[in-house]
Length: 328
Image 1: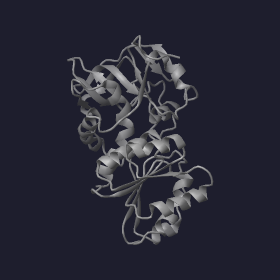
Image 2: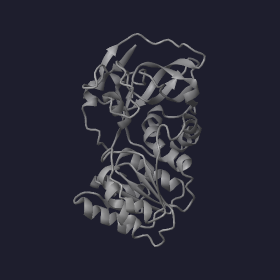
Image 3: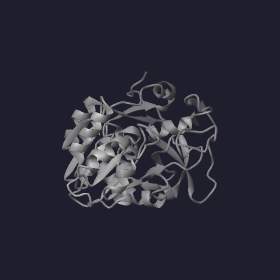
Image 4: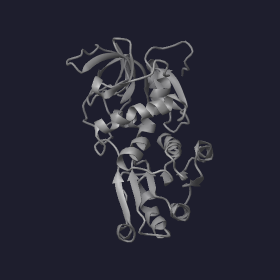
């Protein structure tokens, strides 16, 4: 079979011919991969920087995808926790980490949308039980996951969605996805933090994909402007695009009813994620959540890998090349 193979964390994957793996247990199956998304998490997996990295090499990147089982059924699957990922013609999947798809589901759309949508969907249903009418600030709303978070917050009944990010074009587009207020984080960080405080003082939840300096600087401006500091504000750390560490002001934890929690692998069990997949898949398949995929054959992995990750489109690889696919 053919696969994208990482043999060094200092260089990207190469398209290689390798031996196909063989199932070794009752819960394993060798599936034909139909589509797999190039998520930021995949890039971090391939360069060894993600916190779940085992530093095992060589590895086939790809953390999820859509596959066809030997009996012909379509499934969405999360790749196993080893070096056999989804960027291949075929991959071993754990049937306990796969859910069936409708026969008419679009594999490319599912592969594009599931991962960026999963973080906010699972957060709002598993890490905190968001009640209809909640108000939310999304830090990093111009990223792919942040754009999904805007749509998901709207779908789950948010009464106010404040979206903050740096990319001006994406910020303008967020109102069409459901954002009530958009705020630019470009320019002076202290000025941006004050703007966040003025606009977001009454939110119930912060979905934070940035962390780092934006989080550290904006906590007190938000908390000190709340009309009722005894009303709980839950800050949920999901991503760290602005830095892995944030200098949390101690006054933030004393001056208001304020809690900081995280959401990701480990804080939510695999069973918890799996339980949310069917409803999320249904929302994507029914068009309640939108994505903007662009499809490439896996054979172009080396060229595509060098492109900027900051794109309006979600890159999806299909192992079987088709004549109408774009190329470099």
